[in-house]
Length: 310
View (tube, rainbow, N blue to C red):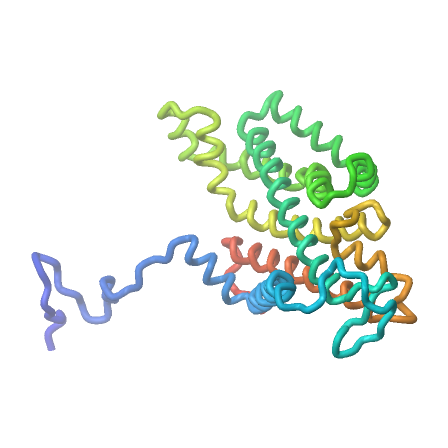
């Protein structure tokens, strides 16, 4: 037998020897984004959490359109037990509990997303600039971060919300002002490491300015860290807003939230448990789902993570 395998080839390409792999038949290397997506999609717990969170969000947005009772209607009998007309009963003031939970879920998710976006923007800008510029900028940002970290978050947020009224956007902005510090610290460390890489040196040599290097080269290379921390910030915002509303210092009427619904009905936990556990279960499901999604994203972006967790 001949030691060479003949095959139709164009040009002067050398023949392939017996036992050697055909490199033309190998799959093309996956991009980093495709690898991250593949690992995330194989994370069963994270995908289940995505389904739960999407279901809760869709129900909260779509069901009120078809639900026969409005969240502001207080003309129903007080403390009506669960029935076909009122699946979770009515409140003391005669409001349907299902419509209250739907409305509270809408505002809780809106507040959480606003907090995550604003806190992430502040943290990424401060952290990236401090990590790249270092020196006096790094010192100023670090001292500012330490100052905000030593201030009790809930106490300061409660005072500011009380002063500036309890509209949902006020609650969101106040929580964001006390939630950017962990993101800034992580981003600063990433920027310090990336600023020593060759592509940053090449950008400097080509005459690129500070802002271009930071936001064109450094920040895109930190997208994994930023995404994971932004996801976890959503879960933290949900619980922080619920804590403020539970003690009566969060969202004020006519706005509402899951924390406020729980606060208005926690005294009925033993006598009419459906009024308390309805919104409580939804709040727990949202928080757990976002945390599990964050875990899945962290594993997917981790290059050292080769095995996909169940």
